[in-house]
Amino acid sequence: MVAHTQTQIIVLDFGGQYCHLISRRVRDAGVYAEIRPFDINPDALAKLQVKGIILSGGPSSVYEKDAPTVDKGLLAWCKANKVPVLGLCYGHQLLGQLLGGKIEANAIKEYGRTRLSVIKAAGMLGSMASEETVWMSHGDQVKLLPAGFEVLASTKDCPIAAFRSVDDLVTGLQFHPEVNHTPRGQAMLENFLFLICGCKKDWSMDTWIKDAITAIKKEVGTRQVLLALSGGVDSTVVSVLMQKAIGNQLHCVFVDNGVMRKNEGKDVEEYFTSVLGYRQFHRVDAQDKFLTNLAGVTDPEQKRRVIGFTFIEVFEEFAKHLEAKHGKFELLAQGTIYPDRVETAATSKASAKIKSHHNLTLPEKMSMSIIEPLKDLYKDEVRKVGAMLGIPDAIIKRHPFPGPGLAVRCVGEVRKEYIDMLREADSILTHEIKIAGLYDKLWQAFVVFLPVKTVGVMGDFRTYQFLCSIRIVESVDAMTANFSRLDWELLDRISTRIINEVRGINRVVYDITNKPPGTIEYE
Image 1 (cartoon, rainbow, N blue to C red):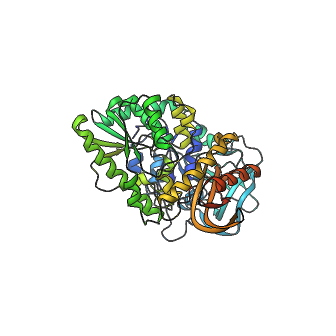
Image 2 (image 1 turned 90 degrees about the vertical axis):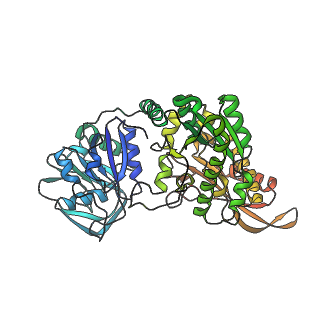
Image 3 (image 1 turned 45 degrees about the vertical axis):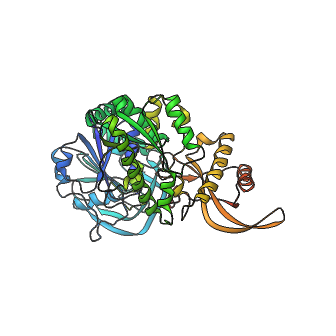
């Protein structure tokens, strides 16, 4: 939605798990980056202020049938316009193949930390030491370079680990500079951005806010907007941003859907009416409707569809009640952010769909159009925007909460009694994490209800009750995450409280799965 006027780096998505990390690292350097499909037409690039293109990694082999590749005119367009191209991992191999080199599977695969021998400290590897540690993840290799190219670095098992064209317009790295496991990776990327592409550091949240407000005003005009307000970080930031842009044309609608956290409805209403002083705040009690529509639904994707469709139904019904006073509502605002769209595989045909997000599984026929001011931002960027807009830490630092609420933290069928148990257990966990001073250090900490009964003993009596799982992770942007290695005494205290205070649960387990291979949420 925001019309970006800054220098742009385009990252072409070949389905690699680190694709969006590349974009993040570029933005961290102060340069705006966007992710586009790998087969984007060069005509579309001509409309953008493209200073450089990065080809991401991916799971395919370049010599496979139907392997993803760039539009046939892309490299010619880049050469004609002197736009530098960087290929990483699969992108490195694809450039080698398209330009006349030779790619083959190698008998020895490279995965993990590897010592890189820098043959020529030039181009992207300028200022690098003779040896650097890099992160490898590949089986194929560039075996022969095309004419007009030179080798910059090698490893013990990969003779061409980095190459460039003699005019420095094409660079390939077999390793991943975007991950933290490559210590000098950010410096390498900045060499590409500033020395090769000639980018300027003109991307900042301050600039983004100004552009966003201008874009919102232009898109909305004199129309009325409904905002799907959850009270979480994303929707709160959207509400304040849009208030600044269009004032009372914005109506914030909080739908109490029956799958929120403990006291969520009361807390959200109090904050937006008493603290922020919103005049156009509306709370809609639709708990019975949501739980009725979810009855018997066990498939996670179907849950998200049901919740997404029910949200729209509730909004459209409520909008009719407001139309008599405020006129017709044509726009529905949402707090969709970049990771939502990543996991729904909205950026590339080569990406695997991980899970749908309820605000991206909307009915085809809607009376309102969607406006998503945050759709190109990552969670940490959203928090920075919120802080700059004056939103207090109590909101900005709240842990992410899924749009479908506790419905996707209740594995299998959603029943009111299950949600009630989950809500109480989750409240205990949050309370203990805050008391321990860990809340702001963690990305997410929550409880998952599992519809499995286990045998236990309480007060010399046999119990046969339900199981819940504690999920606590550390992350920067939710693209990857590690389970938190909490103190055993804290876990023991949390478990004891849940079992003693939540009737119906007699066993607590701790989830030690990282992302990948798991996702942060269970469904």
